[in-house]
Each structure stands twice: as C-alpha cells, then as structure tokens.
Amino acid sequence: MQWVKPSPELTKLLVNTMGDFDAQKKSMFGSTCYFVNDNMFTGVHESHIFLRLSEKDRGEIKELYKDTTQFEPIKGRPMREYVNIPPQVYGDTGIFKPWIERSMKYVVSLPPKAAKAKKVKK
Image (cartoon, rainbow, N blue to C red; front, side, top):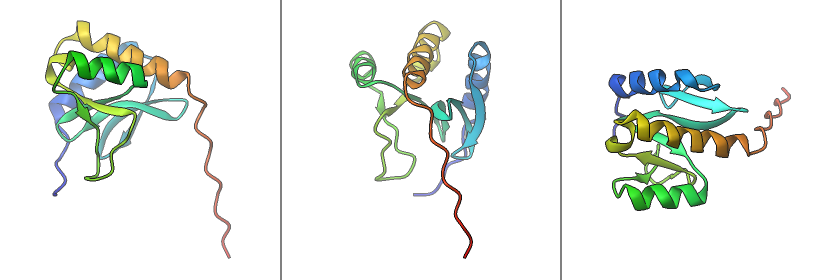
C-alpha cells in the first residue's frame, strides 16, 4: 500500500483546535501530532485524525460512532490504544474538544516516556 500525504485541511483543523491545550506539537507519520510528557495522544495520519484513549473511552467512542476504526499507521501493525475518529466527531468542535480532553487526561495519567539509552560506538 502506498503512503498517502496527510490532509492539509485536517492538519489545519487539528492545529486550530489544539490552540486551547497545553501540549507539544511534533511531526510524526509525516504530519502534525501532539504530545504530553513525550507521550503522543492525537494527530493526523493520511486522511484521519486519531486519538489515544483509555479502554473505557475507546469502547464508548466505538459505541457512539460506528465509523470509529483502529489506528493502523502501517498495515498489519495497529496501535492498540489509538483510534481513528470519524468526521462527525472532529467536524463538530463541541464534540471534538471533549474527546481531545479525554485523550489528554488519559495520557497525562501515564508515566512520562523514558528516554532511550544512547548507543555506544564500538
């Protein structure tokens, strides 16, 4: 499967929505993603916006929005805590922002990502 360039419209929508949140913006998957304590919690991948959610919240969003899918940046390699949210969620700021808040709250509860040990040259 060929890589699809991230949607500039979705990137702009996410950047504009994230203005109210205290998170670090970084580039991942060739697009914009947001992190707290070096843990990624939302971003744009190809033509999707994804969120990292607790098991309970993943169940709830899948029940409320049947078009919610597993986030799989590489075919056959799903990221288990992440879901692609449907346009009806990110298309309505009143719905989207509370889901971002849930995602951020979940990620803040996780331990900070440990720094990788540097490899020693031989």
